[in-house]
Amino acid sequence: MVSRSELFRECQAALEAAGNPDARFDMMCIFQDCLGDRNPLFSPLEAVPTDAEALIRAMTERRISGEPLQYILGEWEFYGYPFKVGAGVLIPRPDTETLVDNVIQLCRGNGLTAPKIADLCAGSGCIAVTLKKELPLAEVSAVELSQEALPYLRQNVRLNEADVGIVAGDVLAESTAAALSGLDIVVSNPPYLTAQEMNDLQAEVRREPEMALDGGGDGLGFYRRLTPLWKRSLKSGGFICYEFGMGQHDKVGNILAENGFVNIKFTRDLGGIIRTVTAQKSEENNG
Ligand code: GLN
Image (cartoon, rainbow, N blue to C red; front, side, top):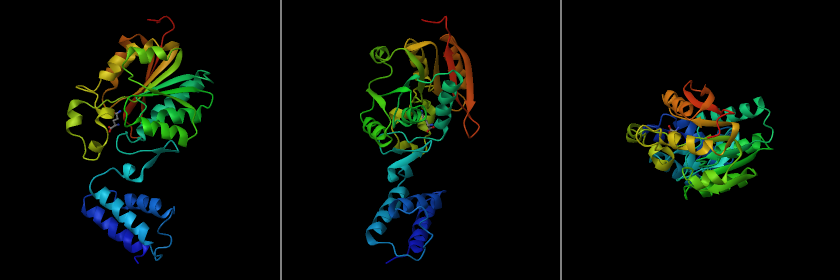
């Protein structure tokens, strides 16, 4: 029998030797998950049951092979809510909490107590589900095309008991946009990485779905196509809210302005990067 602290030290050292800079954090998450204990080193001399030991060793091996920690754990927190994740779905990032905050602030600031919201490229559902939890009277739809991501989206809607309408469809198709009309808010974290960034992806991010990351060429294809298409589904005075990549703010802002949006405002994420934009469909602009 191996003690908790012995096994912890051994696995942490193996992760460090493999070049993992967060070995202690990762091992803590794996121990918490396998032992069902928030503070697994509180009793360092306690023996680790053999089945838990086997699981911990297997998870450590997966981590050493470069699989993202979030996929190994199978669940990750976003905005305080749990989300099931695994191969085929983008891992929720803290940056995206800024986008959720933007939508909540817009609703509060504009008296939208029961807003009609569509989340495009919904992935795990972290945006749509969180918005439904935080704005219980909202009518939230989540649009996702990927057959790999959709099961996670369904699971996360159930897990969080969030009444979100799931639309399996292509956000770039006229028919998808036409089926969702009279929206107060369109929110999206579309794929936005450039061809260059896709080439230079970190090994771990390569394990995530290309479809959720690859914005094609300059990374702005989705903003160019979503903006004119979904403008028609927005009420006049409604809002569009996007996340984008570092350095893309001017170009995304221009796309919104060219499409007649007004009150274009940017927000920085917790890392200080200009990360999101909100823009309003002007009352005169019904095209
Ligand atoms: N933020 C993600 C990354 O840089 C990209 C997500 C996206 O393309 N929407 O890994």
